[in-house]
Image 1 (cartoon, rainbow, N blue to C red):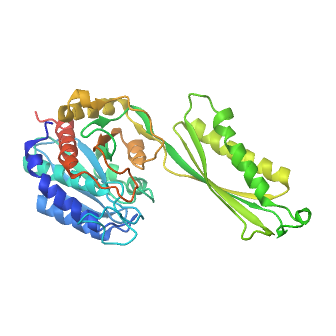
Image 2 (tube, rainbow, N blue to C red; image 1 turned 90 degrees about the horizontal axis):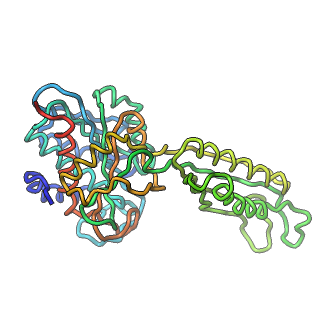
Image 3 (cartoon, one colour; image 1 turned 45 degrees about the vertical axis):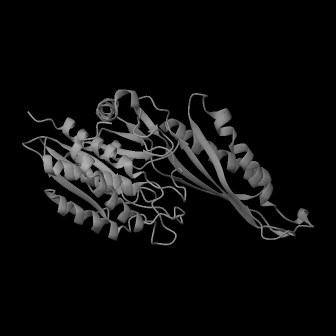
Length: 387
């Protein structure tokens, strides 16, 4: 695989960086150790500017090329997950209940590796903006960075990101133009009746039959309200009610996740959830409270930039290892906010066999770091050509 030679030399350094990050996982915006570590490495690398404290603990670093030109943004997420690690690696998490179970430590190490190469070679005209983002897993750090004005402040014209993909062939790249990852919304439906003794249900208003009917009826949103070609997931993930065998509870609740790609499908799903739950509540004589929160929007790849990114990936991996019509994924990604602000593309990179994302035995494949870093560095050189 034609990894850039200088980046191949940086492989052991990226592994060292990644292992330090893995030992010290932090969550959401509370990435103070992580941010300090990244900033220190960037100073050692010799970037031109380091801007800290964006979205609390985010960083944007600039590397200037040989001459004037536009600015390209390369993003890596830095946060970990609230999971107890089970890898038993000698660099395993030193913080109980927290671990890098999604490979953001690897993403950060790859962008640092690309930064070291670009700061040394500077074979481009313009500026590379290295975006180290907090709170991808929870909190929408990309949205906060966009709201903090990073695109305008640093004149970023295009933006790209990459995510590791365990279980997919090592060094293969996957993407697709248009919507690639789904929007993700959350609903909590609370039903209140009148509790009492289970032996005298006629004196109660039982919330459990209403909740049960809602769970069943919500399945019809996908099967009967949207077309077969419109991807939509409505999954009820929790249902809670009751405290004892002989008590009809006063209330109960369910939660659901709703995922899709198109704005009109998103609107329809919310509308039908509300109608179904309110209608069933009325039929059962209970009251209902619906909390509906819209989360990350769909991650939409710009078609032209996706084609460009795929060409660059082909240079690194070979065209036979780049899939440009990958199936859309129902997972969500807050890089969507950056793609809504600027054209760009999001790709997955296969890292071979291993535990899946968000699993307590997940561990980023360090052999993949030079491949990902080469891709990121070559993106900058191709987007900002000399001459």
